[in-house]
Image (tube, rainbow, N blue to C red; front, side):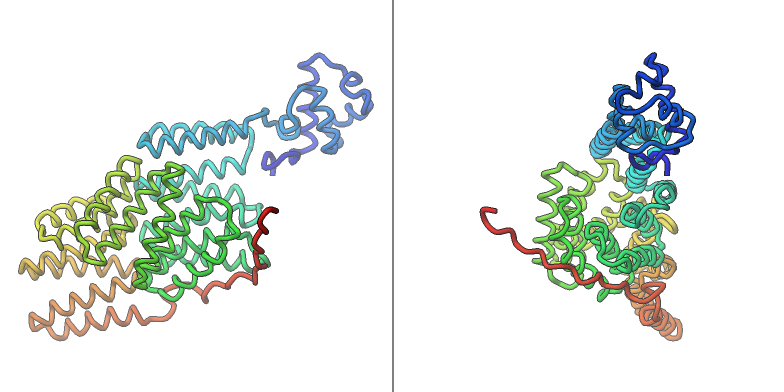
Length: 462
């Protein structure tokens, strides 16, 4: 792969580059070569007949006053560092809500990296752009960026492709194809574990990423297992932001199993890192999760405060699509606080940005809640319509737990109207989908990692 790492360009390209740099400096082949090499060797290299060793390239680079990377790969000295600095600047711009500037800067950086065929950096920059696009709801465009990033790294080891795979899985998850998202992540986990001792950081990212899809599919046992395996890997991962992402994901599993105190503690750990690193979009998701925890405990005023904070921060950081999802949960809290008209108005507005292929799970949640509001108001026909729409979305997304719950509500509604056969059909539909084997994955459960060596504590004073 040209440009992917130092010293990987072809002999012909290296030869032409050496000749151009030598000529630009007015040097003869003998002047360039001596005392370390001969003019004949330089002539052979420039003709593309042989590719010099790394030692020879470093020698010629020093004589030409250029970096080794520029001679070996054609990469100007400092370009990689410059592109990474630009990537960090783009993240800061996005976190400040300057979406167009952030995406424009990334496009320029991708163009510069493409000129020099720096495929690893092109893939990294495209993955960053993909995550930006997902944040404000351009799901297909974001998925395309992750697919291109993965294709650029096709001949690289799996750990190099994990972030692109995780991004593609996230895009499918947000589009409503939760089952396929699980399949992508499980396949990568199995491949990584099947290669022997895995890359701990890459594996932990995959386990953390699959927790959300598992919970949506009602696969609680698998979600709990993934959370435990991810936590086991944490001591071997040094990146604090990756660790924070793990704690935020694991908190969902803890909350789903009524371990609210542990979930709260995990969120505190994650929030501390995001605050330290000033990553506002991720910090907003911690507020989102804390709002959910408060709502589960019927601390509705506290839940409203956290969710409103999350919405404001997400919108300020350009993550409008995620903000819409939080507002669905905020509408539920407002309804429970006794403001059904306000909740209904908000949900109807939000549904203009949600639907099949675009936040289907949250669209289903919005219709589910609208059905409850309409039923409470005595509008049985309206309630039924919303329940049936929610069921269609939940069925397409394979979110079996939510589907069973909505089917139960629809069945109860029909039963109260004396529509017994229809009610039984609704109950059976929800229960059958929940019990149907194979709905959580397209294969067996992912393999656990090989036995990891124990990390010995560092002796004091060493």
